[in-house]
Image 1 (cartoon, helix red, strand yellow):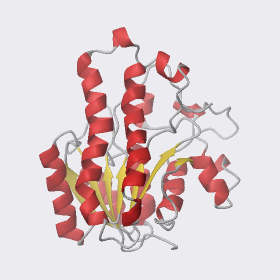
Image 2 (spheres, helix red, strand yellow):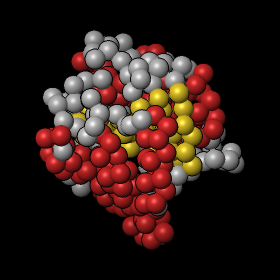
Image 3 (spheres, rainbow, N blue to C red):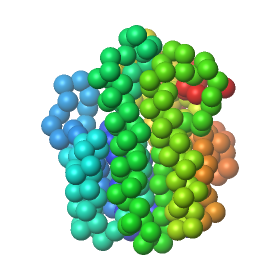
Length: 272
């Protein structure tokens, strides 16, 4: 397969950042993209809404559906999926991108923040996948892609932020289990994670983080596209890293993805 023309993608948290970049890459192929996110009105600190994302998707050549949905709410998830199927006739790809982050130690992580990360990252991923599976079973080349890391049990990846690691690894555990569970249906379930920090507006809000020492979201979008056009029956259960995916596609020069070309890039979490 060479592209995503005519395919329907359901992307969570796609009003900005990596989710939006994946949406725009698909839109350039002529895909249909449903953006399911909470931001319907402008955020005081973060740019982008579901409506501005939809406008960019259509300007890039795709068809867009803006869906205000909190993926912590099962009813909202079910309604968003149903609306997508009603509008575009089905779902070919689910991208579980929505995520909550707090890089705090145990004593500095209020239970409200713990619950938010578990509800968005792990539970939200499970809920969206569960809702989309019946429709993915009817697709020609169905894919589920989690924006989550490989499962690295080195204690150093837990010590500084146990709660976040548990919540994020919950997404990766969904890959581990669901890829086997739905292999017989031909549904690919994979994870994708960046080698370096990715410069997003959300990242810039984390104290001490310097987004200029990372790469642009487009590197993850290009890697995601490469995965999503592969044969779903022979590409499942993988924990992909963005630069490795691009290398397998013959892309070796990654300098164009750097925020500051020539800068020493900071590695992302969970990668030794």
